[in-house]
Amino acid sequence: MTSSNKRKIIIIGAGPSGSIAGALLQNQGFDVTILERQLFPRFSIGESLLPQCMEFIKQAGMLDAVIDAGFQFKNGASFVYQDRQTEFNFEDKFSPGMGTTFQVQRGRFDKVLADEAARMGVDIQWQVEVIAVDFTANKPQLTVRNRQGEVTTVSADFVLDASGFGRILPKLLELESPSGFPVRQAIFGHIEDRITDNQFDRNKIRITVHPEHKDVWYWLIPFSNGRSSIGVVAEPTFFNGRDDYNQALQDIINQDTSLTSLLENAVFDEQINTIVGYSANVKSLVGNGYALLGNAGEFLDPVFSSGVTIAMKSATLAADALVRQFNNNEVVDWQQDYAAPLQRGVSAFRVFVDAWYDGRFQDVIFHPKQQPDIKAMISSILAGYAWDENNPYVKNARPRLDTLAEICRQDY
Image 1: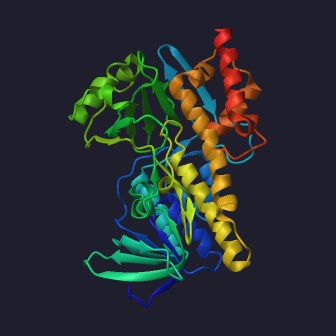
Image 2: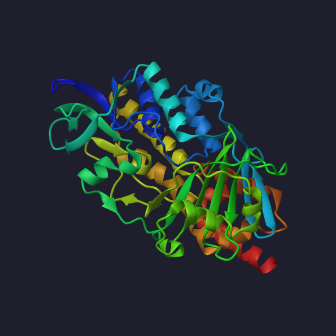
Image 3: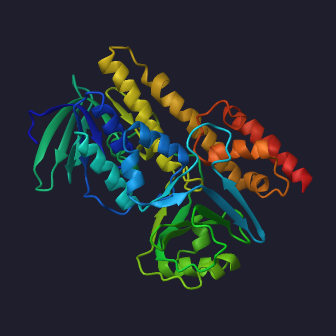
C-alpha cells in the first residue's frame, strides 16, 4: 500500500458488517478495500445468529457459502427459570422472512464471510491497523500501519467503520458516549458439552435465568461439533472480584440445578474469557465522509443475540446510501437515510433489553397462558425483525410491552 493509492470506499474491519457491506458495494461496481487489524480465523463472541441475519447474508450473495459451512441449525430460543420453561419457534413469527438460522463459531463464520467478500473482488488487507484519521481534507485520509511496521496514508471517498468492539473511529474522533445501561460483565468460553439429555434441543439457544437473581442469566449455544458456548452475565459485584474465570463460571453454573444436570459431563478445556462494560454508544453514527457500522457505533446487550443482526442491518443501510450518493448522484442525508432508520430497530431491541433486566419481559415470556398471535409478534423481535413496523411490538414497542407485562402480572 502506498500513499498514492486511492480507494472509493475503505472499510475498517472484516467482521460481519464489514464483509457484508464490502460485498454489497463491490457488487454495485465500487472499488472497495477492507483494512483488518487481525488475521482470520480469530475468536469472537456472539455466536447465535438470528433469522433476520439470513436475509442480509442472502442479499450480499453469501447464503450458499454459509449453508455449505455446516454450522449448527437454529430454529428458536428456549428460556428457563427454575421449574418454568418456554420456547419460541422462529418459524411461528408474525413478520415475513426466513425463520431459521445458525449457531456459529464466530472465528470460522467471520472467515467464511470475509472469504466470500474477497472472492467477489473486495481487496482485504490483513494485519493493517488504522492509527490516525483526517476528515477535514477534501477526501478522508487514513494513516495506517502494516504488519512490517510501515506507516502510510490512504484516501477514500468514504469510510465505513466496521471495527466492532475495536471502535476505531469513535476512539480517534472522540465520539464515545455513555450507553445508558448499567455496567455488566460477561464470563464465557467454549466447552466440550457432552450433553446426553435427549430432551435437550440443540437447534435452540438456551437462556437460563439465575434461580435467585433474575437480572443474572446464562447462555448455552450448542454447536454442530459437540461443543457449546457457555456464559453468564451479571453486574460485576455479583462476581465478587474473582479472577479465576474458569472456576467462577463452573461455580455459578452449579448454582442452577437444571444447568448442573445438563452439563454434568462437560469438559472445560479452553480458556474462559471475560468482558466488562461492553455496552457502548456514540455521539453520532455519521460524520463528514464516514459512518459507523454495528458495534463500532452501538452495542446493547447479548441477551437477545442482536449484535450481529444490527451490524448486518447497518451494513445494508450504509451500502444503499452509498449507492444512491455515488452511483445515482442523489443527495443523501446520512442522519435521516442511515442513522434514523437503523436506530428505529435498535430502539425496539433496547425496550426489550430494558424489560428483560427489570423483569417485565420475563413475566411475559414465562406466562402460562400465551396468546398465539401475541407470541408470534414477540417471536418476530426475538428472530431479529425489529425493523418491521407492521408489528405493533416494534412500532409502539414500549407502550405495547408495558401494557402486556401489566396484564401478565395481574393474571398470575
